[in-house]
Every structure is written in C-alpha cells, then in structure tokens.
Length: 130
Image (cartoon, rainbow, N blue to C red; front, side, top):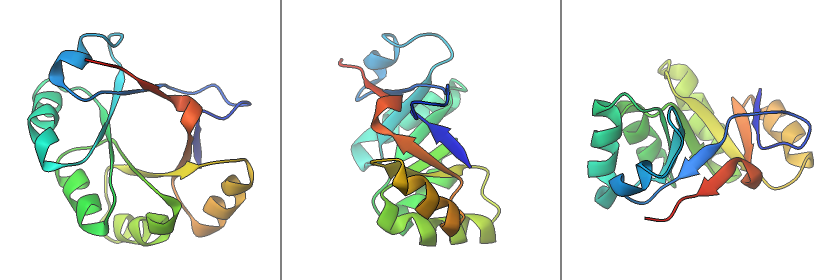
C-alpha cells in the first residue's frame, strides 16, 4: 500500500492545478493533480502530450474508467468509491493506481483491508493558483 502525505513517510507531492498556465508554476517533473471534468480535458490532453504524470480526482465509477483511459498515473477518490474502483482496476488490469483520501491514520487500516492501492492525505496536495 502506497502512502502519500503521511507524517512518518516521505513521499512525492501532488501539485493541484486548474489551468495549463498553472503547470509553469510547479517544479520540473512534478506530479500534477486535477479534478476530472469536461472543462479540464484540454489540460489533460496537454499533460499526456507532454508526458507529464498526473492524478485525476474522480467522483464516480464512470469517471474512474475515463481516468484510466485518459492516462492518469493515479486515480484519486473518496473512500466510499474505493472498494468498487479497486475491484474494477484489478479486473481490467489498470495501469493507474487507486488512491483514496485519508483523513486520519485509522483510515490506513480500513483501506488496507479493502485492498486499496494507496492512501493520500491532504498534506500531500499543494494548490497552485493560475
């Protein structure tokens, strides 16, 4: 199980952007984080064509499927979707890893018992303004 933003574990930072221009404000080789929605498809296209790794926050199983097909490295979601998303990811051999938002350390155990690829704490996400 992968942990991002946990106080004991050094991990990569996710840079939450809302525009292509915001990418210029991130360090080189950054891991980009953005919300999945139709308005962000141009950003996603830019990321994939530039070979920039990214994580997509999704809110439904349909969006989980979109995220994998759009080339996301990580698919980030709330815990209530995690078990079903992980089952689908395992069934279809996704390249993307499923990450569930974790609010506290107790979530780690719950997510581990469900077989979720990883947990992401809020500390791992840095918001970048345009």
